[in-house]
View 1 (cartoon, rainbow, N blue to C red):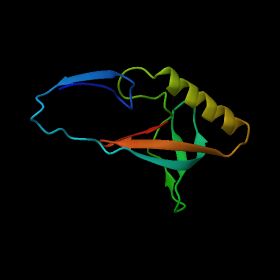
View 2 (view 1 turned 90 degrees about the vertical axis):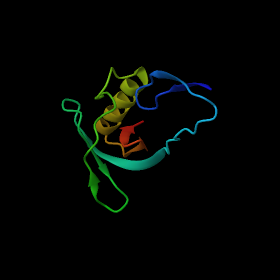
View 3 (view 1 turned 120 degrees about the vertical axis):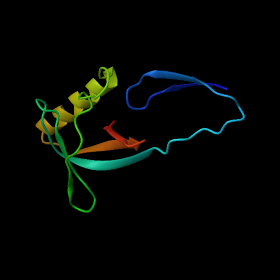
Amino acid sequence: AHIVAIDIFTGKKMEDLCPTSHNLDVPFVKKTEYQLLTADADTGEVSLLQENGDTKDDLNLPTYVKIGEPTEEDKKVTEDMLKALDDGKDVTVIVQAACGEEKII
């Protein structure tokens, strides 16, 4: 089978060839909503409020990527988040998680 996919974290196109008799692992993608408390444009650090009242501080703005360059969508999401925070609005973000990675989308 010839499989073509787009990486949900980097936007990079991936291809794979494998026999149809083989089994393939399927990632489970989870999306969770959090309220955005703070975001630092200089360091990329964000603080999110979880449902139980704790904060989640282990994520960065979408433009701070580990591999490659941020996509246009990453730049737009970051810009929208920072503008809404500056305007004093309540901001809710969606965090997409799969394969041990998480990203604000």
